[in-house]
Length: 213
Ligand code: CDP
Ligand code: CDP
Image 1 (cartoon, helix red, strand yellow):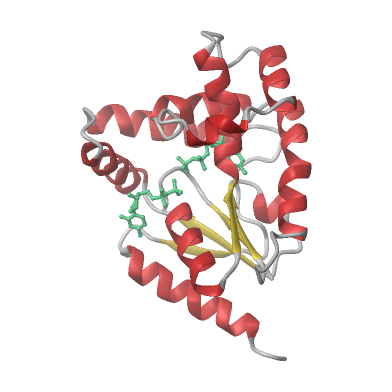
Image 2 (cartoon, rainbow, N blue to C red):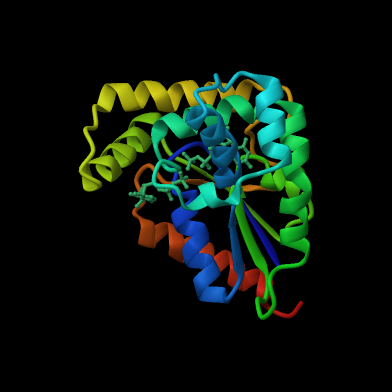
């Protein structure tokens, strides 16, 4: 079974995907982390993230060590990720890994959950369940602010909101695999839902699909 979770920044995709994977013994892939690793490679080298050649090179020979880097989750890394993610060659370089993960999850796992922007539309168009998780930009910016505060980082709501909006625009506006719900995706607006409420809804949807027909 394959579950595709897409949606904009800080909608709660990762939290939901992780909890579903744990509950149903599925493997989990955070595909945004791959784009973040490419973006972070350039930032660390002082290269502008709009440099197509450098981004292509970084995505061809992805430094997987960066997936554990403490800067991976920074909003600046998210911004750089959304710039390299608009480049067709970078997307193409990362696509096979994601498709293979979904088709052949690690041993002992009963399925796979992937979260990102184009899982339901491009990476796993045949997924058994597609969720498009959203929330208003203000709610998402506040979630990010709380996260940063929790890590002891300085967090200005207006600056975070501006970053979230800029990233939404880049992700929805690009030509290649833009952020949009797949036609057969179920929309889940989490603006007024806490994590447990979202999780319970999603669990019910997965269980429906696991029932023998
Ligand atoms: O993966 P994505 O960027 O979509 O979001 P996330 O990292 O799962 O969630 C961002 C933050 O929002 C986390 O701190 C979650 O705990 C929080 N969250 C929330 O407060 N309410 C939800 N319904 C979902 C997530
Ligand atoms: O956690 P958050 O929602 O803030 O972002 P992320 O999922 O870590 O993704 C970072 C950036 O990578 C996004 O803003 C997208 O530009 C890009 N991305 C993408 O283009 N396609 C994906 N499947 C996943 C991420």
